[in-house]
Amino acid sequence: MEIKITLNGKLLTREIEADMLLIDFVRSEGCYSVKRGCETSNCGLCTVLMDGTPVLSCSVLAARANGHKIDTLEGLTAEAEEFVGFIADQGAEQCGFCNPGFVMNTIALLRENPDPTDEEIKKFLVGNLCRCSGYEGQLRGIRAFLEYRRGGNHE
Image (cartoon, rainbow, N blue to C red):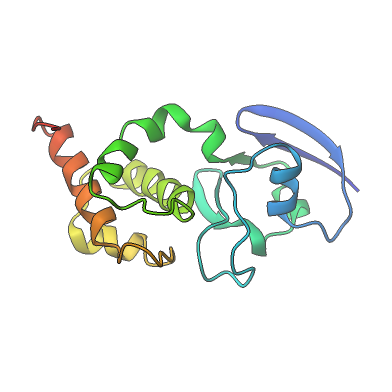
């Protein structure tokens, strides 16, 4: 079947199998930041933005993305670079495997709510699993980024 997807700003027309998952489609297009983790919609490693909303690409058929805009970390590098250093400064990227999912969800969060509370951040990131850092580093990094945006310092 033929699909048309705007992937990271580029319109693609591709022939796919009807059962192809979105994760397999974006990875076949070179978007390797989208990682295969649990394959049960529980870890957040495969998060992409569909029309600006986070979705788990391991549980979405590529055919369902037909006509939609899909963004991966490869297409949002400039936006991500604004805050990933703050997360790294907190030691929250020990192995780095979960980072793309956290970054994609943080981008979506900050687009929707530019000044979230700690509880709103935790609620938005609840679907991202991290086995290394215990989530506090990510939370501290996001808080530090928000403080920096308000005019604070980034040391």
